[in-house]
Amino acid sequence: MSGIPGTVGGAPIQNIGAYGSELNSLVARVRVFDRELGEIRTLAAADCGFGYRTSKFKKEVDRYAVLEVILQLRVGEMSNEIAYAELATELGIKVGERASVNAVRKAVLAIRGRKGMVLDETDTDTWSVGSFFINPTLPASKIPTGAPVWEQEDGRVKTSAAWLIENSGTTKGERFGNAAVSSKHVLALTNTGSATSEEILEAARTICARVEKRFSITLQPEVRIVGAQL
Image 1: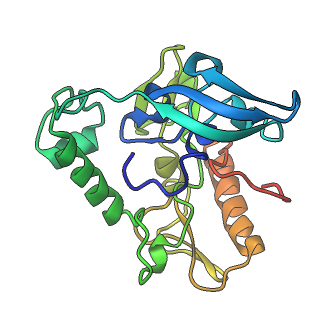
Image 2: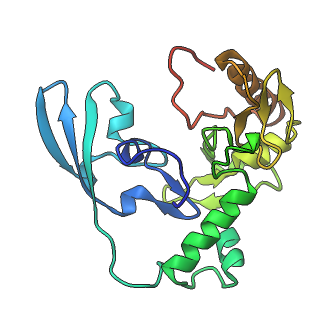
């Protein structure tokens, strides 16, 4: 999860994750202010409603304010088994093998850097909120031929939003006024310097419409949009 922008307090709301890891695997408990009850509460990880890029806190965003996140980390110099093929390749190992945690962090930052997902004040490709859309989880019958798939515990499969976007006509670097699709990664919508919120929304809506028309799949935003809808 190295290089993901944001704050500790925001991390459990989104249940941030990347390259085969998610925050919920490390959370012991979360201390929150419950606006409905008017009191501070401590919730165990099992009570946080964690799911793919979601949580109890995201579903009831007006109720909870995250005050503290307590993580439970494993002691040692070796990582968990590497489950993500791209990361394993970067490390020069096979999926399912381990590497040092320092090597994994460096590899993740290198991959993210090449995709414009690590902030660089001189590179407008990095002026984004990261991945704008989540990877859809669908019945296997709805996955387009050739799309990458990851089997899920509930029998459905997850596919790549980036693949759907690229294969429905959106190109890296495509401009929407002063907003643009990153020239490094189609999941990132970037501000080239003076983009308005409406230009970002126009880009997102156009991308969604193309995917819907080509594959009959509705993309969902990973970001929280305030005061507007796609």
